[in-house]
Amino acid sequence: MRSIAFKKILLTIMVMLLAVSLFTPSAQAGDVMKMEKQELSENEIEGILLMREEEKLARDIYLALGDKWDLKTFFNIAKSEQKHMDEMGSLVTKYDLEDPVKDDTRGVFTSPEMKKLYEELLAEGQKSRLDAFKVGTMIEDLDIADLEKLLKETDNDDIKIVYLNLVKGSRNHLRTFHRQVEKSGGTYRAQYITEDMYNKIVGSAKEQYEISDPDFKYEY
Ligand SMILES: [Fe+2]
Image 1 (cartoon, rainbow, N blue to C red):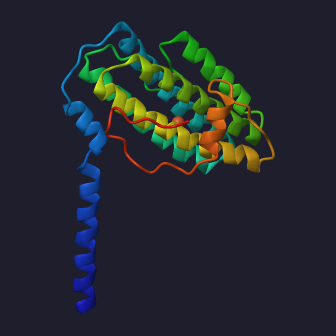
Image 2: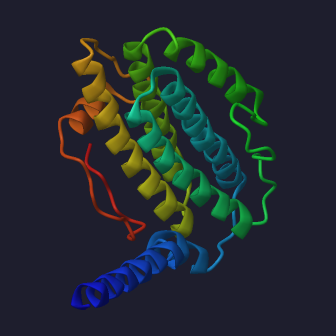
Image 3: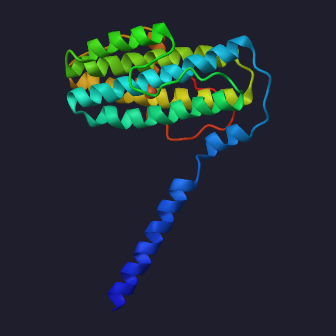
């Protein structure tokens, strides 16, 4: 009898924990949405629209390469890219912009450049597991370069917080993909960020924190 009661209590606790985790939005996304709207420049609008699709590019490529090579690393990182896409989607909604993601289907993009990049990277990543990991490394390299550039062009605190957390995520993904490239016996040379930045990132520990300070600076 006691054991049944104990199991019931345990089950109740588990259900409660699950409910809390399902219905508590991440503090960061919630806070950003609650922050006051600030006027957007043309550059800021372009940046939001670009990153919304660039996060989709990452998600779609990782899902495709995960399927192709049956590699958990890609599926795990794709989940994080989905969150990034959603955060960019929150900014699109908050500022009443026209969402470039009109169709969430894998490989569908509004920007022809993004579509072209998707096809090139997919073909490259399908050659071998090492090439797949190199493609992952390249996407994160590109993401970090674009986000750091956009951070310099924005003065809106809400956008800055989103970008700062996205670029932190990209640094973590870069660390993971870099390790996989090395384990597979390959090398990758930075194409978008400087070699110094690349080495600093892959030579440092995973970042586990959430950024809520718009003036946060990562020392590369
Ligand atoms: Fe990423």
